[in-house]
Length: 80
Image 1 (cartoon, rainbow, N blue to C red):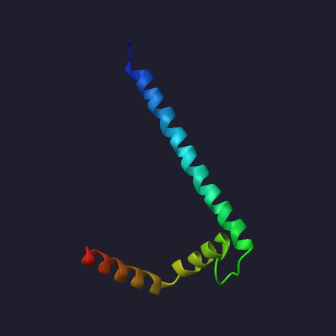
Image 2: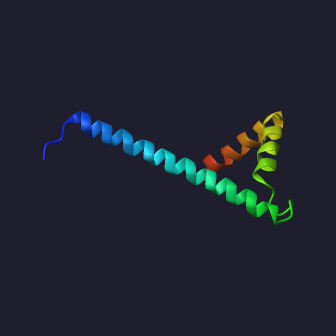
């Protein structure tokens, strides 16, 4: 069997795209499952992904978030 580099490169590219699609669909399925389950639970127990990402956006506008994140990362590095 003879393989040329162009066909190998083409196969590798196709394999990478399939893997990327699978990962994307997995993330989308997880978010959808999270959303559906959050409809049946109290928001204090399991908030919806929309609420979580909205709060994340608010938190990222606060300067104190970065101070606390820096302190946490420092502790992680020291712990290692």
